Amino acid sequence: MTPQELSVRTKQELKGEEQTRAGRTYVPDVDICETPNSLWLWADMPGVDEQSIQINLADGVLSIEGHVSLKDYENLAPVYTEYNIGNYARRFTLSSDIDAERIKARMTNGVLELELPKAERAKPRRIPISGS
Amino acid sequence: MALFRFSSPSDPVSGLLDLQRELDRFFQNPMGLDLGVSSRGVFPAVNIFSDKDGYIARLEVPGVSPEQINIESHGRTLTISGKREVVTPEGGSFHRRERESGAFSRSLQLPDDLDPGRAEASYKHGILTVRVPKKEDAKPRQITVKGA
Picture 1: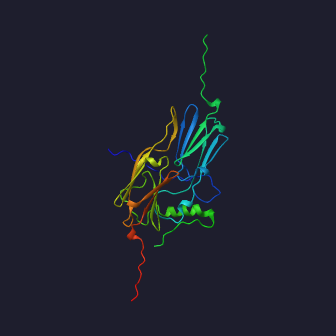
Picture 2: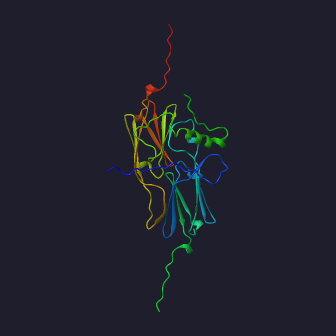
Picture 3: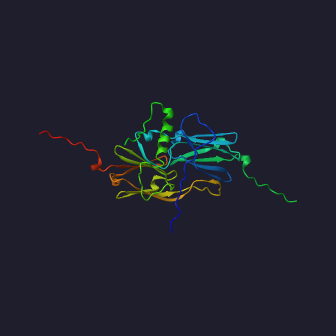
């Protein structure tokens, strides 16, 4: 039996927000996972150098942005294309309170990994029931 | 046939958009490069460029480390395969799952004047670049005219 092939969707352009710079910005695919202590996020941003990554958390909105470099395309002529190249950006409204000071970010193999630790008051708390 | 060659314009402002528009033109594949077995929409996405020395294939493989990538050449065909793994933290529940994980394999059937046996691959930031040079006898050769 043929195993299910992994698919790749056409990149979606970021709509609704004009960037001042020319050039299309795309929305990266993300996985978001919640554990008792943190919110985890992985965003596929191939071609992005970690130096260009910007992460912002303000008023409960997390925004991530990464830029690609054109240097790798110098003197190349396209012959066949399936994907377009561009910068990435995406925003999320967070439902949990996040401790912004302790956010950890890591870029590996074109994937941005964010650990967003929940603020103490947002963690689930067991409420003890005292016997009568 | 004049091929567009990308070069950073002196005005860096329009550079990215120019490149994007040029890549758009090739989505419909007007130049007729037939990759053979491969099909669009299958991971990983492939872009193919040419320069004076041969072809350069770029594949977006975020989340795949170079050790997990296997590249094989067989005649005119280049096959790139591997595995993409997605991390799942202990005791977590997913709110969103947009990234797929699993094994992948794509075969690219390249034009006759290339030499896939001498291909070289490099990896950076989640993008695999495979350079396939032209066969020696396919390169333009100067032929001198001997005097009488």
